[in-house]
Image 1 (cartoon, rainbow, N blue to C red):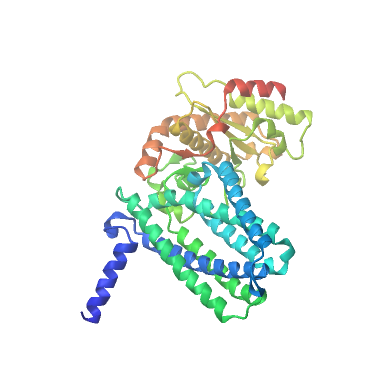
Image 2 (tube, rainbow, N blue to C red):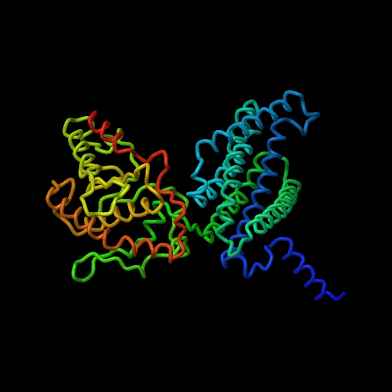
Length: 444
């Protein structure tokens, strides 16, 4: 067999082992770039793990003789604490694995490297091995759990056909190969360096940084087709604007696709609200009613503050006018709210317990429409003494606009490729009942 034939054979075998079948037609164009950078991330992550393990063994005195029984017990105990921490974390996070997979996948890499860094420090504090090792192992288990839980959501976005199982299997093959290469790389580095904690740390730092960079780069190619607060805001950006005549219009052609939004999404930080900007108030989603007074920083616990909150709640949850479509969301405006550094108050959006997916989508759309109307209304400036008549006029305009454009908006969202079968604006447990809200308002 010639060298060229042997090379072609190896290439075909490698493709079959590490890439989904017929990958050019069964996965999105972004998949190869994502897999490439994940491979870099996993190789370097494994290498840093080898150096950390070497440092921990050094801290336990393995190089000076047989491993004492107490050291072995400490090692087992720290592993037990780590597994317990992973269980607690999974209980706390829950559905966020589906709503913010890129955010949690990025931070899983940060947690892993932070935990590995703690392990690197154990030789400096050998008397605190159990404490440091336990905390580090909790971080590692949280990281591994987050990686595992977000893997399905991210892998699914690359599928063009029903080949999620094949893609997941190949992802496992890629991770295994990366782990083997990374382990060999870490062993090579450890063998060529003097056995001291300082030289190990010197080799660890650049590898750790490069691993995080690989994780970040890979997630730039992951596309999330479901909607949360940030992605819905980015989707609607430029689609709801004032025309040259000063009238508000909805341009379906400017509604962004999941691929366009993925390039704009700031997944390193979690955003559960819409930031205020100029005359535009912020949008706060599913705020606890009994904590609204915390958003009135300068008026907190005053009688005026309670009256403002009660008035906003009664206005937000009043029955819809006859002739309008029944809605299962509620929007209130609190001009005095300074939450999220707002200078013109905040809009508050709640969803009814009976709300379906399209109801929550329409509720957020309505809030964005109202926010855009505020951008041209100087008389509605919250902290400068808002004009109640002007606010009522804006609310009426927003309601009429949503009534006229709701069907076109919902159809356009589906046409742009968004998955509307699941919404991630808030937890179902945060949805409200009007009767409960009325009772809470009466106690304010």
